[in-house]
Length: 413
Image (cartoon, rainbow, N blue to C red; front, side, top):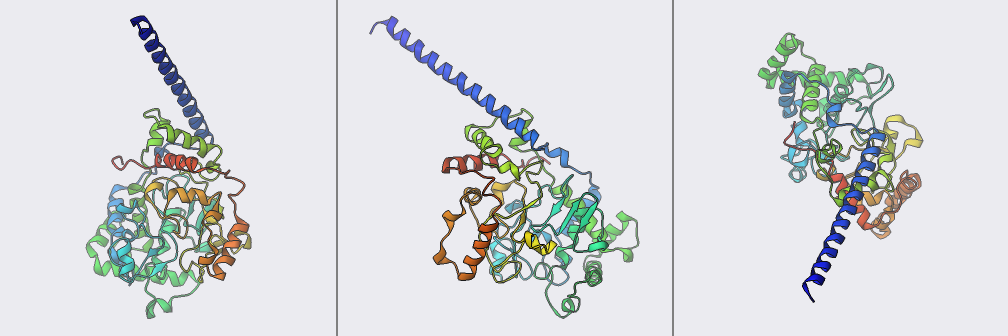
């Protein structure tokens, strides 16, 4: 082969590769524009758009309260027991472990702690602008001007986060030991809860006087005048400060500061297209704060006992709401396993698959008759069947890759 032919072949190869690269770049630019356009159409906004100003002095007090076991009247458990950094503000367990637990994660179970029959929701973005629904069953929520909570007409605050912070403190097994004191107040009345709150405040004043004096000075009241709502307010300032949404690879992509790789781009197209994920996971939190039935298996004894959790029904008492749970936010989702209200699924890929092909995980022989009966109900009420199209394994993996771009940058506050 003479030199001219070699040169000609080399030029052909170069032009072919050059054309291929140009074509791939053009394709990626097209994919990027579609994802950005559909993200905007679905209500996505940058993390900073959700931030609410906080009082840093109150947030510092709230941090101490968040880490204090004395916030639990008699259970020796703190907020940080179930919301710690190594588990990305969750606890890494299928079901939370409340009173009687010790340490973090699985060690709390080994210590003989009480099971709280739901998976711990991460705190990212909680209480930010537009964050309208709290807990898996929506027991604290706002619709228009109406606030729904277990307090009824006696809602302690117009601030949903402050109201939500009130609830774990009076939850038996979570922060309360059902001893003779608690049993005397175990009634369906807000006045009974008020008495528990008073005792929690007294407990903190006795055991952490320096912290309570700092709080009293900050809010301008006498030491003895502190009420639980003051404590809840400090906690709300801390939560909004510590767990506010931060930049992610996706937010930086939206701003044009970085690019997504091939799998992330294809996953984004599936998320906003064929996969139907955006139908529920929309807006700046990647949640529409609505309620759906996804046929995840029920792990543990369940909120309603006997392996049953009625979800939203526990808040509304509407039979149509049985087995419906709030759409979770997706920020840091790759770090907050296990997944679902019952924490029954460990893999992000499998969690996606449950939305369109739950029967691949069904094994009747490993289930009790009651479990099969309940699972039939889940399947009958399944809300995702008509939303999510069939996805092959590669497509599932690509969606998972896209979801990882929603991990928040821990180096930015």
